[in-house]
Amino acid sequence: MNHELALPEINASNANFLLFIGDQDRVTAKQITTELAINKGLVSRELTRLETGQYITRTPDDKDHRTTWVRITPKGLAACKTIRQIKQSLWDQVLGDTTDADLETIFTHLADWSERAKQFK
Image (spheres, rainbow, N blue to C red):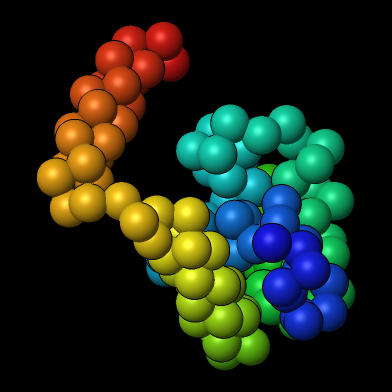
């Protein structure tokens, strides 16, 4: 996906962070680490890159200064739209010849596997 992205500071790794952040009102780095199962160091580096590119803002909590809230910016929302279009195009290419019945079977298996995987958290 990297070669498709013409967005400064965005790569395949932090594109997923940005999509996650865009789906939230606000989020902490710890929530990103937990939800995406990614180590703190990588999250910190990629958040810095996204902030430098003005895709997100980081703001200390007014009541608890140990907490920093991450929010998406309008530029970040526009980038999310582009990222989703690229991902959809890639999946359309990958699954282009797959029948609807096969897609339904795949979806059912993925949903089942996802539920089973939750027991390992």
